[in-house]
Image (cartoon, rainbow over all chains, first blue to last red):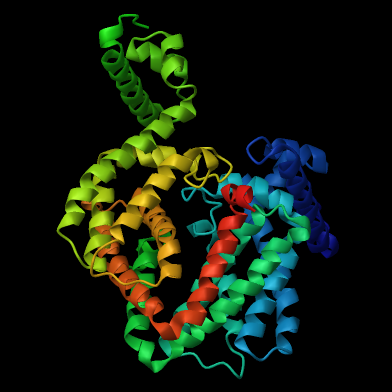
Length: 234
Length: 234
């Protein structure tokens, strides 16, 4: 580690990025379980201690990857949302920018999925460990719902960002297994699901639907509480 | 292998059951990947050739397990359905008998899940290899919808058995991770989801909902076609 104060942060960021990039490349080539921190450090040309200084474990490398995806999505979505006023257009913008951000990592996402699909894995998107990135993503969906033309009842609005995040995880799952050219199938699915979601949200916002909506939202709450993370709040 | 004709089938069935029981026990104790066919044969007291005669691979043991669960569910559900006339009561009966059938295998289901959750695994409930059991389960849901008091439009009725099967897979996933005493949480979830499903099916059956229903069913079709099995029919 460099001890020179001025350049320390910049150099640290560079080293951190280098380690992350190297690790992602190796995970993609060899698989997650087959790649050791030692091998990552060696290939990145840093000491093992240095690698562990930036990433306490292999899992932290994946968390950093999730975080980077989330940052990129935020950077792409916010300006794109500015010109969209309707719920449908805003949801579509959210989902398209998300998938475009992830596109370069399609192969790696497939490798990662084999590990992360297990709900007991700390790499699972529903796990405690992925909390901060999940919360940031849910927060972004909440912002997408804040268009001026959008009227959604309070109870639904409170849960919708989370439900949209779950939906987005479903789309990512579809995309991981999508072998169509340029993943056109995923983008077609986006168009069709967002169109339907828009209609369903409008339907659920109708005063006549209040009892059914309340019941469905209670059920969402019940399922959320049963998730590992939910137990804390019981 | 015995060559005596009269008792061959009975003895064969017994041997087959013995091998399956032994394998399930060992999978549960050691894990699926850690158990070899050789070890199963040895513990069951049969030759390796004999074990392979009945089960061509470890995967076939799991398929046999799925098949047995399905047979037990059928045997429990059919008589119970006879006295139930409403959609809600019939769905509840279907789901309760399903979970009761699986109850003794809760621990094993957890072990199995770690392997089967990967969509590329032939043990995944959506894979080609699990076709016959999945079809039998979907068929059973179709029978549950055939109550005399139940009116569901044709288009929805055609897809509903499949959708209910997907729902039941979701419940199984919840149950696998349910650590509440006697899995009460799962049974409570059943009550609440079936109640909501019943209302949603009635809502979707309303003539006013026709356009939205058609659109949702087209989307279901699109997603089904994207699943590995769906490709064949394209």
